[in-house]
Length: 243
Picture: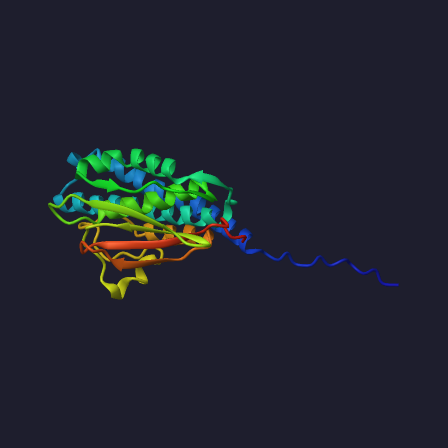
């Protein structure tokens, strides 16, 4: 008789497993080399007087800027991956408190830009508390960032109740977005402006869209009455959808 060796069936990776692997790669495998690039560039920058030419200084500055930009991109992708791997924790939350926390977190930026942030009495909703904070933080920070020169940001939040959902609108008086790019801006790392004009890596609306979809809603862009951008999104009253 022949002995048959038991053959183990191959392990099938689930989407959650794949996202967890992706998060590890982003946070560990990619972040390490980037930290090395930035760290050694900073050490060299401290010895600029010893470099032979202005050209060398310029090259070092470009390396440092690129390394820092890459690190920001990695961190943005890591946040995106965590939205897929960290379980949602729905609870009844008061968005009035959430907005107050966001306002406090952005207070320094609001003061520096003389921004105005107004909103009505916010409802209580069934949602993930941390994700709701992130959602409003991303949208309000974007509204402040993409402001017009010499014009203080005027950000207004509106809310309407529907039978099965809440509808919100975050409206600003900023530079606006060409309608032909309304879909593009929700893609990861998609930027419409240079870093010199508006720093950032282009993840804010991507993350906001992911959170909205996780809460059974939809999100879209329109031109605001003041010529800026209005981000309109819904959140299901039933709370986050199951994965």
